[in-house]
Structures are given as structure tokens and as C-alpha cells.
Length: 97
Image 1 (cartoon, rainbow, N blue to C red):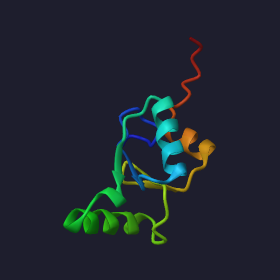
Image 2 (cartoon, one colour):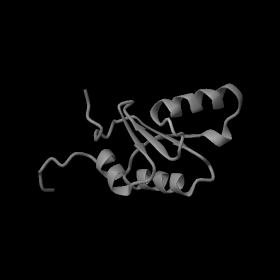
Image 3 (cartoon, rainbow, N blue to C red):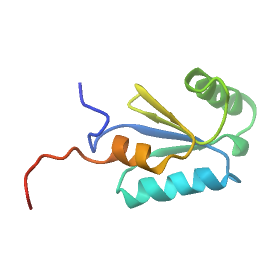
């Protein structure tokens, strides 16, 4: 199984459109060159909103934002730049470029 740091890792960001920490997380992931799916809960309605909220609460029972899920294995709650960098950067191969 691939590690969290694989550039092919699946990354889902549960966010609110008005959340400054969610925006910072998006900017960081973009700066790291990572592709990711953003689910802005407050822009959903009906069944979509209920399903997304249920998925979020499975990973983060407090339901706080941002919540970042990597490979459906690891969850990072809140904005912590170093933790996100460590989880989403490619592994150091020890090879000088």
C-alpha cells in the first residue's frame, strides 16, 4: 500500500467557504503541488449536505474545519502547516538533485 506521502495520495479537504483556515489549507496544498478534492459543506444542500456531514463526522466527531483526509487512512484536523507539509510532501529519497 502507498504511504501518505505519495504524490498519488487521495486528499479530501472538508471545509467551509467562509473559513480562513480552510483557505490557508487550500493554498498550502496548492503550493505543495498536490491535487485534492474540496468539499465545502456550507455550499451543499439536502442529501449531498447530509452525506458530506456524515463523512466528515466519521473522521472528525467534533465536526470542525478544516478536516483533511489522506488516502482514507489519516485525518488532520485544523490548520497545522508543518503537520500538513509532513503528510503531503514527497518522501525524502536522500538523493541530491
